[in-house]
Image (cartoon, one colour):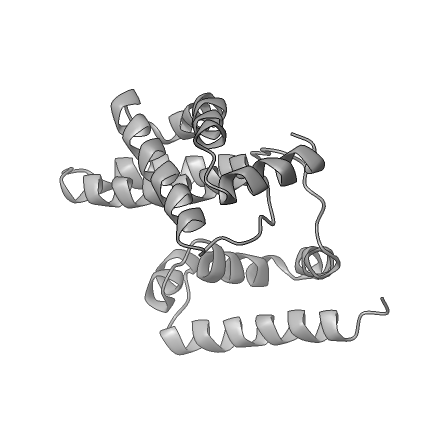
Length: 190
């Protein structure tokens, strides 16, 4: 959708238009299903998760939690759904004997997520700076910050995944990486 029509749609949603909510549900369902299939869940699970994500979206608008859309509706729904999918996979992995299989699926999908583009959105100047200087970091810094902030890994899990010797090494490395990133952004000529 164009930016103008997204804004018009969001105004209708904020005003409680049942037609607009129904249109959002219908027009984003197939996109979400196609996105979620990469996680290896069944169609029934995917539809349940989509409905849960849609309910969160609806409630966030109704209770005033979501007052301004900084992305498209599709992007917002998929971002909610992604966390619900990962929660479902974590719960399912507790009932599966071979957790390595589930973890490999999640890792493959995570890689796919990095390359999955929903809609090209204009980044804010701050986001552009963050993206620029993040890309200039070393591979270890990018990996540790991605695991901590994007994948929500705790320090212990980063230690294991990254092959670090101790949690203190991870903490100091993360701190140095973040400091480098902040200083690059702060000292940016723009």
